[in-house]
Amino acid sequence: MRYMISVQLFFYFGIFLAIVGSLATAWGPGVKDPIVRTFNTEVASIGVCLVLLSYNHVLALLTLVATTVVITLILFRAIIRLEEMGADV
Image (cartoon, rainbow, N blue to C red; front, side, top):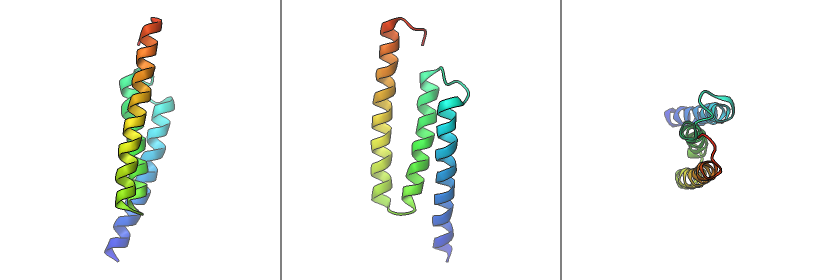
């Protein structure tokens, strides 16, 4: 029984982090700063990882690595494009 409680805790805490991280990325404090936006997306990806951790450990690890790499590459490319256009980043 103790194992089921921890799995449910991972699941619900992961959903909470995914929702809060997504909202913080879209409307949260400092969304104009690309670094803060990157941290906010990482919070959401860790939440998704915790949700998948309640199902399978390998799936959770692969999801965390994949989302971290993809989000980081996309946001850094967006930062470089904004700087090339002369925007104040």
